[in-house]
Length: 150
Image 1 (cartoon, helix red, strand yellow):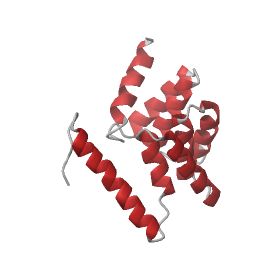
Image 2 (cartoon, rainbow, N blue to C red):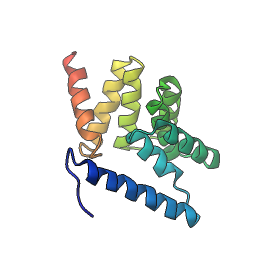
Image 3 (cartoon, one colour):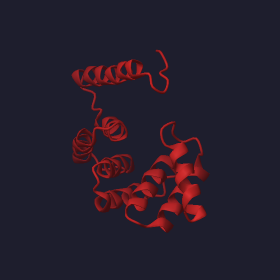
Image 4 (cartoon, rainbow, N blue to C red):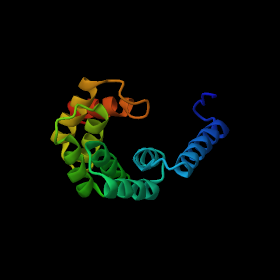
């Protein structure tokens, strides 16, 4: 598999097409990929698809992982209050997931709760500063801005 670089639109499209093909093959073979699809779609510009996948997975099972994916899909759709409730469910058992904490922090930020956002983002970075190739730099940047008071 070829690694794409910033600005490599053709390479990026090939990777998106590959993900779509893998998901179609898995679904055709009875594999449920809604949890993964919800997170992927929320991160890659398909908020409606993310929400549909998260709802479908939540209808099947309630777990901290599904609650987190549902929260992130709601966030991608601008439904921050509802997203916050699911983010809290994802963290209710004390799971130390930097990704869950990042999601909760970004949701709190959108709700105007800078103290909560700072707490969650700080915990995310402390848990694993390299938790996500997509989000780790954002977490550090937003946290630095919140800590500086800007």
